[in-house]
Amino acid sequence: MSGTNGGIPVSAEQHSHQRTAAEEVADVLAAARVRRCYTVPGESFLELVDTIEQRGDMELVSTRHENGAAFMAEAEAKLTGIPAVAAASRGPGAGNLVVGVHTAMQDSTPMVVFLGQVETEFLGREAFQEVDLTALYSPITKWATTVTRADRLPEMTARALRTATSGRPGPVAIGVPGDLFGQRIPAPTSLPGTVPPRPPLGDEERDRISAWLARAERPVIIVGGGARWAQAELVAVAERFDAGVYTSWRRQDVFPNHHPLYLGHLGLGCPKPVLAALEESDAVLVVGSRLSEITTQTYRLPSGAADAATSTVAQIDIDPAQVGAVTRVWLGAVADARRALAALAEAPVATPSRDWSQAHEAWVRTTTPPPEVADHPEGPLHPWAVVDAMRQVFPEDTVLVNDAGNFAGFLHLGWWFREPRTQIAATSGAMGSAVPGAVAAKLVEPHRTVVAVAGDGGTLMTGQELETASRLGLPVVVVVFQNGLYGTIAMHQARDLGRTAGVDISGPLDLASYARGLGARGLTASTPRELDKALSEALEEAESQSAPILIDVRTDPEIIAPGATMARLLSKGRGEGR
Image 1 (cartoon, rainbow, N blue to C red):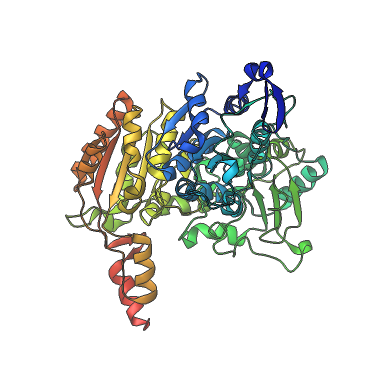
Image 2 (tube, helix red, strand yellow):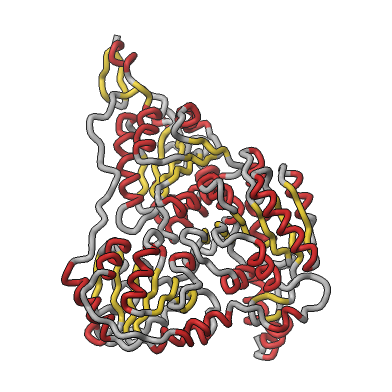
């Protein structure tokens, strides 16, 4: 008796010795050091879930929502550089996964996504929950495909891993009909390599860049997530050339903020004094940054040039599509950031000393709470005071996972990142990333303090993942800035229209009780004393490895952003007749 597996005729004897496609796929993942699959289990990939659960070298993490699963996989890869797996079933599940996958795309984070699909014989007939997954995911991934033969699944998985980690990292999606993972297939005889080459900086490029940096009067470096694994090399280059360093949007941890050559974070609302050194620079080296809209302050900096010959910008990136994509460069080099920085640090040139103390101090002043914080009246807390209190309590190597929202403006100014890989933050601005991101961070770094920071809006999008943290025994800390507003939109409406609409959230909500209902501890802080006590208790919980804890911090909705109040913005908006 004979049959077929993945379109290949096999005998009954051969069939009995073969393994399932799910088992072969799991082997490929494990060989690439993938350690976790985050998922809401679905009927379209039963065998994959079962196979991973049975392995000792991989962990299956069942989440409360596919959005949380994607954010967890994205956060893990940010910390490890190795893709994690996010898996979702057909139609609704695949749709729920989209936000976290888009985050991985914009954040250049490697991820492998398995999407369950209808059975092969029903494809293209609008079967139950059928969606064209390749079409849905193509715009938000590096590569999306649907596999229709079980014996091709190991090959496609290896290709997915290679694509996700080659060049500019990113997510890859594989649609898998529900009848494939359980089929028995021959062992793959050869597979694509899963470790892509990391190109070095050429000697000629090294010499030209180093000579340029050495002769410049005010050289600065803009560094992004591509240098996440190269802090030591980056510090060596900055000190070697006495160059000031800026970190790109939400990549504040790639260079130690307390270093005297650190000039600041190119984020939203970047204070003018911080930008001065960049505006005055005569040489800007961009390393591992795609120069996003926010990093460039709406594509304004570093300033462009009429032609490449007069440009003051050089760029090093592993992705050739990013080199010169935003501004003209006089030299562009395709190279791995760590290898390029290591080469530059050894360049044989003499470099004059430069004084960056005033520029560094200009940044330091922006990180200090303004006088009005101390004079803030009783009632809801000033957001600055919350960040300042956090700085006093949590260790310097805390992994900080921050959500999107206006509260984050205070965090970006007030928190100093001294250690590498201590910031997980979505450059895509996706709300809801913090709580699930903290779950994954604690799985990866079980002995470090992990703190999620979110607004009440973002917390109620994915806060149910506190149950995941509780179930897995992960003592993450969640600090919620509850002001009863969708703050970012309220700010834009007040400034541009002179009024608000649809931004009020019912409250204050009892988020501490919400946390307790999900198996976590819950505390509420409305005064500085209550906040200090709650933060200290949270640190004790984290250090004792006991239970997750949420601190519901009541913050003043009038203090809408650093240096801005709702009253002033509303008045200005109305005064301009908008």
